[in-house]
Amino acid sequence: MIAKWFDERLDLKKFKEKFLNKAFPAHPTFLFGEIALFSFITLVITGIFLGLFYEPSTGQVSLFGAMVPAAYASVVKIDLLPMGVIIRRIHHWSAMIMIAAIIAHLARVYFTSAYRKPREINWLIGLSLLAVTLGAAFTGYLLPYSQFSVTATSIAYYIAKSVPWAGDWISRLLFNGEFPAHGTVPRFFFLHVMLIPIGLITLIGAHLLVLVKQKHTEPKANSKRKAAQGGRRLIGIPVWPEQSYISVSLFFFLLFVVVLMATYIPLNPIERYGPPSPVTPVMRPDWYFLPIYGFLKLIPGDLSFTLLGSKITPEAIGGVFFPGILALILVAIPFLDRASSPQNYIENPLHRPFMTSSGIAGAMLLFMTTVSGYIDVLHIAPASMAIYVVVVTAAAWVVSYLLLRLYSRAAKKGEHVKS
Image (cartoon, rainbow, N blue to C red):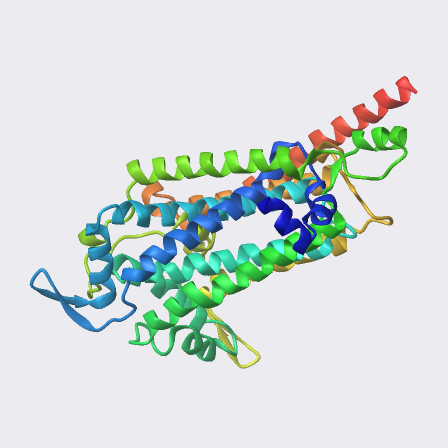
């Protein structure tokens, strides 16, 4: 009766025929996007809870008889609430999973060439999603306002300040003055809970709209099935009810994993680090910023020069140019690897030697720069580590390219013999 009432007013039957009968690819790698979406939903829910008790201020308040910043005190009090520390950990690990899922999703798109015409727009949206998500993680890093988080954020401040020609303006705009300024925490809080979530929701909505319009890519084997059926519709699982059941099950399984991680894996204990102080603790950023941190470790501290009236410092080379060049390469990929006709099918990575080996080399570069962040623990000189980074990255490309070329030739030869 209720369903009929809504159907008469909203024409739900037509909506179901148009949208809920669409097919979703059955391959499990297509679930990376859903994992990122579900992680974002979890972040919003837990973030609302944390925002009810967090105080975005560096004003001094009393905590257990000591005067500490209000932001720091509010996080300590959150941890003392029933389930408070668990919810804060769920928020933290959901952010980690969301970043990892977006990276895995982009890797699948890259290695299967699903970024080609007409899907260049969604590739750029995906890269923007990754960048904005990293921005959310970065702005959330400072909010506990512990000695650890302030020290970590100060690295980003000096990187922002080192941007050629516009560093002072960018650093003052982002950090609301010389860091740590009294207005930095309120500004980061506004970015973290308002501006960045709006950007994420907008990008997710745009991504889904383009996806519905263009449909998913699918294995080439489906082309023969389509030809036999005389149609061009995507072959897969209907969104309702089959894929919906899978998605709901995935959400609860993901929630179970996150709660399990939150229960047994602690965060950086802010009580141990304490509020900000002149002492600089030994720290490293989370894994998604480690490649930049590691690259900074490889650059000699006295390496600087002047370019067009602006001083280029090691922070600019490692924190601005290095990620900037990587970002430009990723943006340019769909336009450099151009297809003459629209591509609706997944390419086999083993049949794309150059692009696949380039992706493997890029992943190895990020891995080696991540390892570079631990050269003090590994007792490796920066110059030696720089050589290792170059040699290992180049070797990864050459070896993978040669092996893929041999495989591709053998595969073509086998197809020729069969024909």
